[in-house]
Amino acid sequence: MTAACVAHVGSAAFQRLPEALGLLRSRFGRVPVYPASDPGDAETMAAELAGDVDVLLVFGGDGTVHEVVNGLPLTGPDGPLVALLPAGTGNDLARAIGLPPDPVTAAMELADARPRTLDLLDCGQRRAANGINAGFAAAATDVLSRRVKKALGPAAYMVGGMWAGMNPPTWPARVEVDGRMVEGEALAVVVGNGGSFGGGRWLIPDADVGDGLLDVLVVPAAVSKARLARHLARDRRLPGDLPRLRGPSATVVTDMPCRLDGEPAPTPGSVTVLPAAWRVLAPA
Image 1 (cartoon, rainbow, N blue to C red):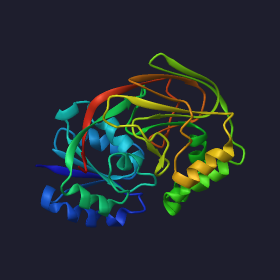
Image 2 (image 1 turned 135 degrees about the vertical axis):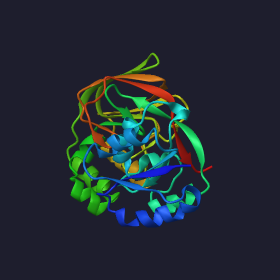
Image 3 (image 1 turned 90 degrees about the vertical axis):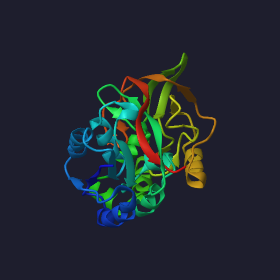
């Protein structure tokens, strides 16, 4: 079994990569490391390595995973098996498949993990592995520089959320899924393959990354901001009575700022599930 590792060298946890790979040596042998330092590096490396390795380890956060899934060919179960070593700020896809958000602890779990087939989201020009964050959630992330995110880790999202929450903007939005529509002024629209966003905030707790469906959450502008804050602070979730939709595809009409897997991008007008698009090692 041949393996390689694409590693984001800008990660605050980069010095822990040798320890994580050491824990996996009995399963994958010595794994060559391909450092990704500039935007687009991980995507290019994934495309180049996909046909040459059986296992592709990804050391980094959701942004690195986002690049990798956009570099991998859509060969489903015939493509390389991907193993995540979460080393980013949010690590939300890792959380969605049951991995701890720490590269060394995750490596311990991966030692006897099994392949799991996951979906992706087709967002037009890009694919998303975990999901789409538009509106207030994206605005909270936009206030964070890379340096701040690296220094504060997951706490950076709390800082950004507090700053953006002082005077949250709203946007007109129309979302349609499987014949159901939600329309009006909104704070946010979240389209999830996975359910965790912003470093472990379970905005869509019922989402399943392998069920062939996407889940949509709409946060209306009229909702109490204090109520939202209480729910997020108390149990890292939003109120259960917010509009939620589920189906194989969604139409989104809004000019909200947007993040795909935490990376800035135009808000996609349509999103479609790509079922069983790739394989990932996940805990049983």
